[in-house]
Length: 244
Image 1: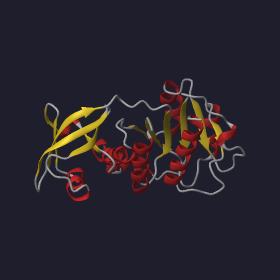
Image 2: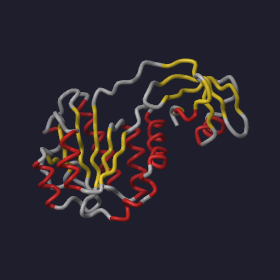
Image 3: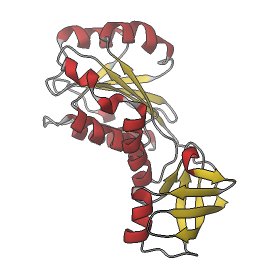
């Protein structure tokens, strides 16, 4: 953990927060902090800052916010449309989204997605938020990724997507594309929507529909990547092009 992420549920009174989970364990066993020490914190969807340890025992830690910074504004905006992967892979993707500042993660159905994945308990907000928060802590971010789940492919693109994609650069990572992202060009402060397919790839109907919606195919790598690795590689490339 590079910062301790605090949520509204942790707040017990004005500027005081009590934690008793892995964040508490990190403060005690990794940071080896003691009462009176100051630690870096982040308030969900707000700002970063520092907090003083008021109490530290075998069960929990009591922190008091002593300073906050101006809210961090990311110089670029990235959304991901991802064919719903297996739960263990999704945990890694959620973590990466938190770490690398993804604004929205749309988990959608594809022909090659196992139907059972949509019944995973990981898709409950109280379960997937844990992995997003772990990512925030790693990346020293506070803005949590918004996650929505869509179990029908075509209605997602014909209804929901139409309302969110205005003036966005829509990219479709595809191994058969000829051009890399540096040939496409990303304007400064341009919103990017990235589509990442399932392990077995999108089918022809899905690719055709996305291209009709304005998605540009590009080659992410000469290698065939696991979904979680493709997400990380794509986000790194988009960030590099966005801040040039």
